[in-house]
Length: 54
Image (cartoon, rainbow, N blue to C red):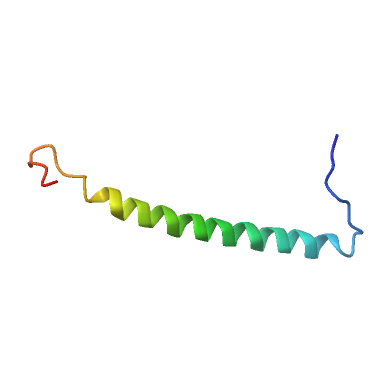
């Protein structure tokens, strides 16, 4: 059962574009958050030959 709204052929491309834009924006935000977490975690990464400084 598909509950997605159906748009007329004139509106559908604009709706698709809006959805793509929103998804891209969300991915950018997710990437920013992930980069922040990665920076935080990367403090704990080191070569197996070095002693952990934490």
